[in-house]
Length: 187
Length: 187
Image (cartoon, rainbow over all chains, first blue to last red; front, side):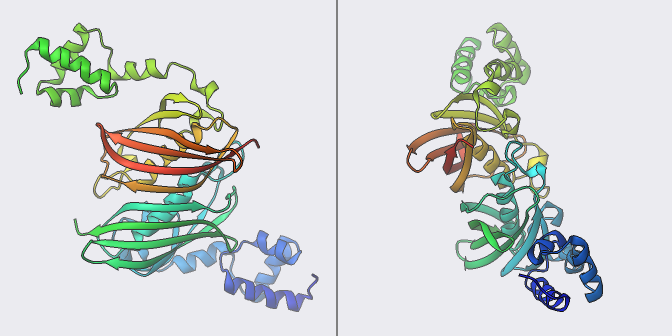
């Protein structure tokens, strides 16, 4: 589908509102234009580049907020967190995360992103995983950006237990789902 | 319990037959003697030190045997493998594997050892994890040696599917259990 420049810029704004973490390369593919065109559009619309967009989201000091572990022990970059409610993180898949043979991301990296987000969302000093059921829905490849969202589903105060569901997506398609049963407490 | 030297050496041999990967330090604790005494016992009984025991087990060239991934992509050291049947690997937990705050091993490292062993045991060129149910039975600490054993439980040829159970132990106590549903095939 061909857009006029005005239509494209309107649609670009909508797309970026829905998914602020989409790359210029993906936008170029979506709108069948060059990456250079997307950059010019962004400049005209005063939309900063992705790196800056992420930084501004991450500017909030999560270090002080997250209780259960130092923030540098979280796998991926936390871009939103509301303790005991939900959290979002982003992980860019590089060749270090993938099988050399086929460029498919190794399962334990997707698990690590999801599991550490499940730990981080807990508003307590100690959070340990008791049990987890995970499904690898679709292979993830080098170059993919994985957005994981953890949601606290339920809490059993007597058992010091919290159930969390993590859904990880690449370009809005689910690639991984994990249910985590966490033990929580003070040390 | 006090042993005579003869009793201790007999019991030492039995212990090492059951668990060849126990350290001199653990043997010393078990028999309430010094590490030096254990070393002397080993010399008298011509039992090589642990590092050599592992090497001799690993001397067999698993590189040629494992099909689904290059052996250096396996997390932990494979010490026994019988394709499409069972496999064993060993992972020494260092501070790199643990939460800085409490020295407890992070779940994704135990998962990575188990998951990569489940991939390695498959006698096909492509092995991907579809679904996994994992239980962290007991916290693992820095200095622990985790022995994971993967057993192929069943195979559904029509669905290209293989079910594998992995049990990980520290000093013969189960610390982690994982069920893995794997997709397999040629690429």
